[in-house]
Structure formats: structure tokens, C-alpha cells
Image (cartoon, rainbow, N blue to C red; front, side, top):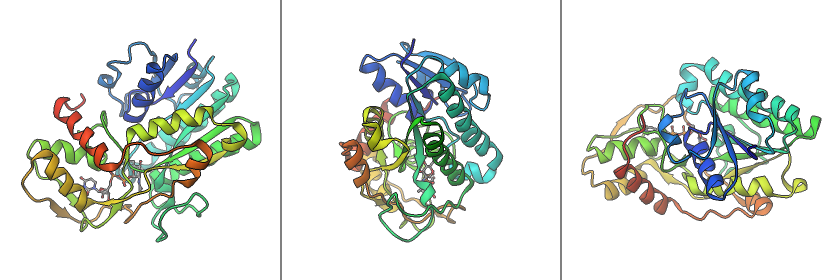
Length: 315
Ligand code: UD1
């Protein structure tokens, strides 16, 4: 019987957490609908028990949660522009799925659920860095959906006593992130394009910035969160980031050096629902989890470019 359940196990973050748990010798069950997850991402995770299914179906959630002690709920329909194009799909795959996972986790006697929160919940408020005690101000359907999930987490802790921990991720990047969709994260898109000698497009003037967080830091925070003392973390939300921001223009210059691309970026209109700056205060995660980012942006992007150089885009 698996001890850990990872939802979205064929996605970028879920895959990475699953791999770390297996490497540690733990028993893992993964679930994925392959709406955005990739079968190719399961390569190397053969020791994981796997269920193909959609978490919007309560029966899938019940089967997935049966007998497990800890759930990493990473499944989502990520992407701000995708949610602008189809808010109902985002709601179904983020909100309905999350409620179903929580109901099933409670029924199965799961001890703790970790939830992939999103920095988008802060919205476009001017104050930086973002601290967890700031009022949320979601400005896209995606941000609303991820934030609703956070509130469901803390409500299930208060109302039912289920242990939950929300990790509010800031622009995660690294190996296995899908570079092939126009809904992909910007770093995956830029790496793929610039390595192929194609011109990347910067939406806006390129002076907007993000606290880009290398995947290894996110995995480490998740492993810490599962074992942190209940009285410290249960029902809480905390930022997981690096605490440093880079602009899109800086990203382009760094990638130019790493990929050998020698053109210029194209500039286009800013994207609807986009926020200008995003930077985290990470002191709460340090205090509650002992989280300290081990890989900074430059090292993370170097490793990521190396990975894209040697790996085919996911199919
Ligand atoms: C948002 C959330 C993040 C969430 C992610 C899911 C914020 C601050 N962050 O990320 O928590 O996990 O959605 O997808 O809201 N861009 C370009 N050219 C491109 C692609 C993107 O210039 O080809 C720009 C975007 O306009 C944006 C930035 O790069 O300003 C980052 O975009 P993206 O990687 O999609 O992530 P966010 O929307 O910031």
C-alpha cells in the first residue's frame, strides 16, 4: 500500500515530487488525467503505482486516496491565459478537483494534504515583497481558482481537523516543464525557442519581473512540509520562492549567454490578466519549515538549459 499520493504525477511538479519520494525509498501512488500531464514524464517512475483518472470524478479521488497517509495535491490546469480563454475548465480542474480530493482524503483517513498554491493569488498589488498576511487580490480566473483551493484547505483543517499545508509557489521552472504549449511557463518556452534558434516574444516592455523558483527548491519545501510539526503548519499557507526577482529582459540576456542564441527578442502587447512584478518574502517558510532555497536562479536556469539541450520536448 502506498504511503504517499501525488496528484498530477505526470505533470512537471508532481513528477518531480514523485521522483524525490521514490529516490528516498518511499512507496508512492500517482494519479493523472493526462489533460496536461505527459506520459513521457512517467519514464523513470516505474516503481510508482499509477492511476489514470480525472479528479473531477469523486470516484477517482476515493480510489486514489485509499490507504495513503499523505497527499501532495499538485494537479491543476496551470496557466493564467488558459484560464482567461476557458474559465470553466480551470474551475473544474482546480476547484472541483480540489474539493473532491479533500473530501476523499478525509473519508480515507489521510493524515495530511499538501496543496500547490499560487503566487497569482496576490494579484497586482504594488507592495513588494509579497507576504502571506497581505489581502489576496486575484485578477485572473486561474488566480481565483487556486485561491479558492487554499481556502478549502484551511477550512478542512478548521472544520474537520484534516491537516493541510498550502505552499504558495512562485513561477516554478526546471527539467520536465513542458515547453511545447503556448500556455507553458515562460522559461520553458524561451529555453526551447532559443536553443532552436527561434525568436522568443516578450509580452510588454520586458521590465516586468518574477521570483522564478527552481524546481529542486519546491520539492525540498514539499518534503519538509509533510513532516513539519502539526501545530506549526497545519491550516497554514506559506510562500515558496527564492526571495529574488529578475526581469524578463534579464532572463533573455542570461539565456542568450547559455543557449548561444544571437538574435533579439520580439516585443508584443502585455498579456491580459498579467501582473507586473512578483517577489516573495520567504521568511514564513523558513520559520515554519526550515526552508532555505538551495539553488538560485542562475544555477537553476543553467541546469534547466542543459536538460533541454539533451531532452526531446515532451510528447
Ligand atoms: C502565473 C502565476 C504562477 C503560476 C503560473 C501558472 C503570477 C505572478 N504567477 O505565472 O504562480 O504558477 O501562472 O502558469 O501570477 N511571457 C512572455 N513571453 C512568453 C510567455 C510569457 O513575455 O512567451 C511573460 C508573461 O506575460 C508573464 C511572464 O512572462 O509576464 C511569466 O509568464 P508565465 O510563465 O506564464 O507565468 P505567470 O503568468 O507569471
